[in-house]
Figure 1 (cartoon, helix red, strand yellow):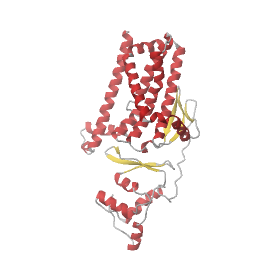
Figure 2 (tube, one colour):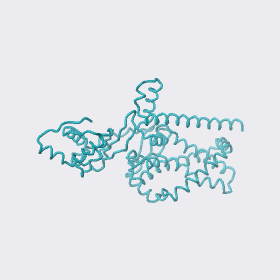
Figure 3 (tube, one colour):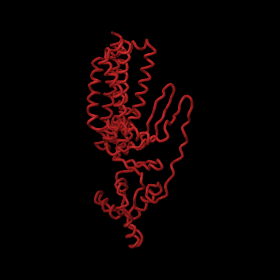
Figure 4 (cartoon, helix red, strand yellow):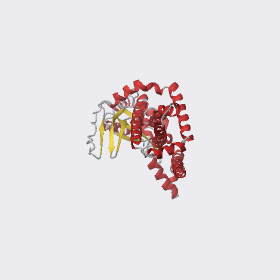
Length: 375
């Protein structure tokens, strides 16, 4: 931002400086996020659904427009932070831009953009399942929100770790059960249905955890790209949840729910006197359900693991930014050196972490195939 000289008469200038702008209720601001070599903040008007990016200086000013502080007070804070003062012309330009976007209290509200409904055919489409997804999620949170308290969450996570250690220890036996199950179409269909239910609960878990941290669920429905039919749950203000921990918890909730779904089946598998067919079916469910959960944590878009990686890196558009940076770095372009140190560490870390995860996944699949061929 460049400083401008004051304009108009002294009285008018003084009156303008006393103006106390405030943002319209429902305007959301994100924390700082890497975007390529730059740092940006996301701004969203929940009324219209419009969102855009601003730089740190613009965010500094917008975030202080609370209807209590005058332009003079905000300008003093800005000068203390950035070492320069803003003139009236600059203030007028900024306020006019915010008003045109409908972000200021008292400005005409911008209507939500008309979005034509997505085409729905037999082969592909979406279908909302509830009229008020946010209210539905709120009811679910009232019933199951106690699971998110530390005294319940920590023991459950310990149980999940123990269950997965058991799955790994018996992986050879479970793999053979998978091979045998393909000769039993009835049990195979039952396992497929249970895994689909687990996927539906996965989506609802995202919404319930987001609601726990003040999020808003915009839609719950079915999405099909035949032959796949899955549920979806859209968290409207995910990037604006207060803090990195709530966003990581929301992203990880689906995979955790997949594993929680397996816990009672694991108890049956360990403790109940089961016939051979049922024992084999539960063995398959434990293995495939675990694979389903951990596959969602692979840090590639659009999986939940990618959202978690983006939060850890503090970045938006992490995959695209990493690709752009690596292309510059591999060509030894001088532009790569213009990236701030934080960005270079984040993009290199994401690239290395993703490669390691994919190598581990390929190695696990290869070991499983080898075991099946030699068993």
